[in-house]
Image (tube, rainbow, N blue to C red):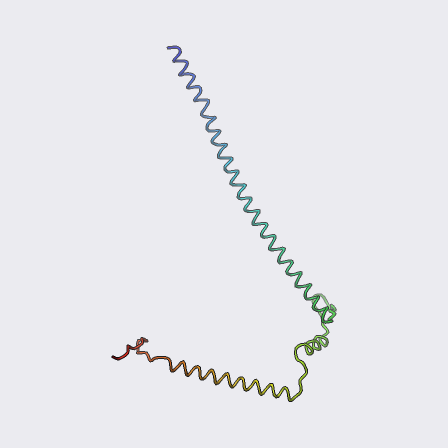
Length: 156
């Protein structure tokens, strides 16, 4: 009887000492799982910040390319901007106008411009006639509909 008493007593002591250890292990596992989830959230947040920074850098680079391209174009056209007051830019419009006159509209004789005008008017009249003919052909192809907007059945 004494041995059984000591075995039962030892089992009770082991259970009493084992329960806190088991619960402590469970709590430590849950804490580790929460730490892993927080690390994943931080990783996702860091990727979002990286994308945001890359977009900001691309916008800044696009702005710089635009400014540098505009300045290069002004340099190529021979326009030297002078600043009259902050934010205002005075351009030498005569050089710009001269450049556009050379590049866009080559000099034409008066007879050549009249011939071009006649040709454009003939093209416009031709397109208008074709449009009217197309509209008439479409109207001829349309079948009549009854009052309920249905196609009538053919008579047999």
